[in-house]
Image (tube, rainbow, N blue to C red; front, side, top):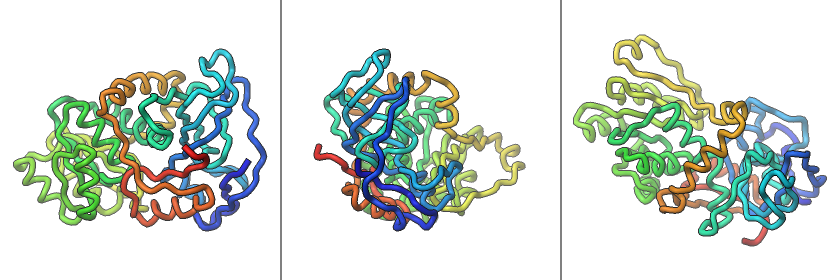
Length: 324
């Protein structure tokens, strides 16, 4: 099979695309012919050895995909030819990938492979973040950083489906358009977002902040919270891990909440399937409609990661491995 492999920690341009051994599925694994792979920030971090896991060289990145089943154990409920979405964790940037049966989901007929590949990491993470970790309630207000990216647009759509008001934080007018098309009620520029948010909320602040960025906007995110607000820490695309003086939390009765979806899901068998069951009605109704960004062929997998690295991405960046 052809695959993009990380062969050193010298960044995305050091990835090599070529032949690699076909993966062999285990007893509880499904072998999938990958049509489209989703591109995620952890894939980028892996090219520099900055992620919490670093397999031996060479290895194939790619944590999410959509494709068709080649082989599946009988107990999985899947058969050869079924259209599926999968979360292999690694190995998605290849023509064939193996995925544990519990992390494979039927792809709705009304969704393309590209739309399917946009779902696992972003939508399952945001569902876990807003529902379980953020305790989002109908009528609350949510502030979303990086609102034009994959996590950002997923957070917008899921928050709106839960009956929340959404304020998007973006860095350009083009990204504001993407966030509003995803369903955001308002969009503000990242530079000086705090006074804009205060004005939009009549000085009260927001109930929940979705933050996949971190960096120097973190303190103003805390300041933007209403009493008993929750700041959800999803990642650090700003490449800087911020710190906080916890007396601020005490004085305002606010929470800083870690969101480690993968760590939780893989320790709780069946949880991802429960999440998927909750997402399916939203997919059917159109409440979930992943905005798609750039699509690259496998030979340009490095360019897909560079787009994330340079924070140019709007919508979900994908890699196409087979004609859809």
